[in-house]
Image 1 (cartoon, rainbow, N blue to C red):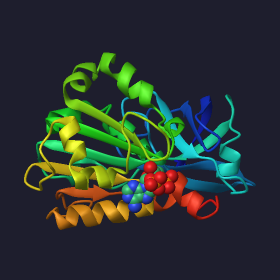
Image 2 (cartoon, rainbow, N blue to C red):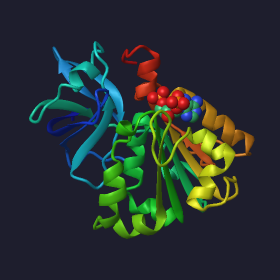
Image 3 (cartoon, helix red, strand yellow):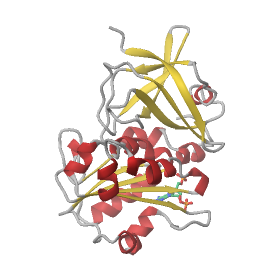
Image 4 (cartoon, rainbow, N blue to C red):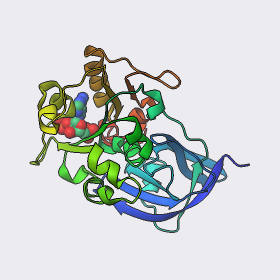
Length: 271
Ligand code: A2P
C-alpha cells in the first residue's frame, strides 16, 4: 500500500495576500487524531515534494482542510497557493504531532494559544466532542497582527455554535478570544501580555492560569512558543510530550514550519 493518498482539491479560500485555506477529498481509511499534522504536496517527476501541515478538519469529516501561508518562490507553498478546484495533491497517510489532548493530564480548563496559521490544529480540536468531555471550559486564543488575518472567526463564533454534533458543547464550553496587535479591534494585545497582565482572565471571567487546574496547548511563531513556554514554566507548569502527559504541550515541528511570522522573519522563504 502506498504511503500517500492522491486527493482532489474541492475548494480554495484566500483570506489575505498571505493566508489561504483549501479543502480536499479524504481517503476514508486515513485516520488522524484532532491536533495532528500530516505532510502534503505534489509528485514532481515521481518524487514527492512535501511539507508538514496541520489538519484543520475534524477527524470525523469526510474532507480534509488545511490553513496555510503563501510564500512566493518557495518550492511547495508557491505551488500550493495557486491550487484550484480539481487539482491533485498527495497526502501522507501518516499523521502525527504533540497537540493532542492525550498528551495532557486531566484538568478543568483547556487553553489553546495560537498565532497566525497556528490556529489550524485547534480548529480540529474544537470540533472534537472528546475535547469537551475532558475539559469544562475550552479557551481558544488567536493572536494576529491584523483583523483580516483572524481567519475562521465567523465559522467559530457564528457557525460552530449551531453545529449538529458539537453545537451544544461549543455554546456552553468554548470561549473564543481573537486579538490583534496592529489594528483597532475589540480585543487588542499579544496573548502573552494579556495573560501576564491578567486582562484576559478578567474579560473571560475565569481565574488566572494555575497548573493545578489548567492545561495549555501552544501553536504559533517560534517567538510566541518561546515566550509562552517561559511564561508557563514560571507559573510552575510542566511540559508534556508524546506518551508523557503533563500540563502543557507545544508543536515543535509546526512552530518552525507553518506560521506566517516564521516566513516573515525569514523574508518569506519556505522553511
Ligand atoms: P506584534 O504585532 O506585537 O509582533 P506574527 O505574524 O509576527 O507571527 O505575529 C502574529 C501575532 O503574534 C501578532 O499579534 C504579534 O504581535 C504576536 N506575537 C509576535 N511575537 C510574539 C511573542 N513573542 N509573544 C506573543 N505574541 C507575539
